Amino acid sequence: MNEQELQQLVEHISSTVFQKPFRHRATFNRRLRTTGGRYHLNSHDLDFNPLVLEQHGPEELEKVVKHELCHYHLHLEGRGYRHIDADFRHLLKESGGSRFVKDLRNPEITNPKWTYFCGNCGQLYFRKRRIDTQKYVCGKCRGKLEMDR
Image (tube, rainbow, N blue to C red):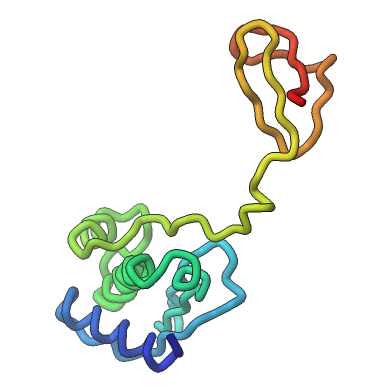
């Protein structure tokens, strides 16, 4: 999908779901890392993360577009456009937009490197960094932690 098709998609969703026109620009922004999209308060433009489309498909992108259009239309109307506002939550629920985007991070980065278990109760602990098993104990039963091999 190129930026012209994205612009048409945003305009179509705005007119069909919200019954209001979208009169600004919608673009892809590769610098976005963990967020699906962004609404610019000053220019009223929308940015979208292309990874949403690449990793999760057009259905997830449509949900992100609806989310950002909620910010857009509510802000232009002078109503509560922030995540904590009741107007935003109500419109988001009505439109079917997603509250959070699915995880966009690289799975190799998010996987834990170290696994520990409690010798007493068997509770598992996953950590990115190594911990001192002489210093820390199980949070559940205070048992001795051991490194899983």
